[in-house]
Image (cartoon, rainbow, N blue to C red):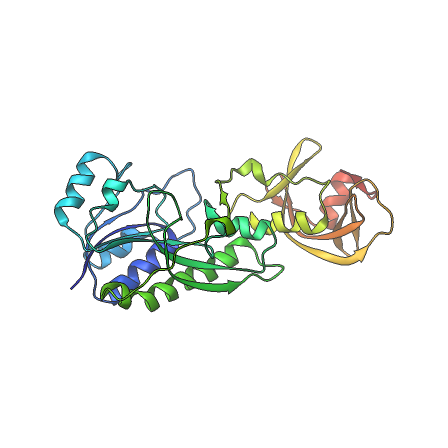
Length: 306
């Protein structure tokens, strides 16, 4: 029976740990994170899954500290797996795995290496992403590829909806690839890192709408940061206005102009600098959902210049 130490968090961590257990891997230790009380926790719990399966788990602030390195080295695991764990693992820690260390990444590597790859793929209007299982090296997301599974991104998909697909893709690629990892027959393929780039993490302020952009660019931002993420926003009369759902209209104004918001056919619309148009399907003002009547009582009947 193969042994493993697993670093895992989030839904991908839950589903991929479930795959290891289903394949009979002896998971000696799971390292996960304590939930941040300032973060909206909308995902499943790795620690609860470990508890249900009588697997020991811990929540170290830094798994690379000497006491954790010593404990993991003493376990002499065949494999180390990392599934959406938020800390980089040191070279010394990776070396504890006698037969290999593997990470699951939420993109089709080498594209979108780094942080929050699903959100970045939506922001840039990709029509496809997926999950990649790869060997771990000291450089993040740069190791040889063990397997991949692609999923489509539809034009109106939110990042949350895409992430649900990526979670299934991660489960599929691990389930398909794990037998050859365990029996030593897998032959990973090196990445061509020139075919992709690294991306950093995102902050709530990065959801601020730039009304000088096109309807498609703004729509991509809105769906990339839609709830449960912090949401796309602007300030109207000095107060927070969030756009939670949108749709690009095929209509197009013939002339360029100043961006504005107005109601037509019971729908709030935005006209942008280049004449492109966007339907704002779900909006809120100061944390409350806003309909046409509420809009008119706040901003009147004339178009609101942005």
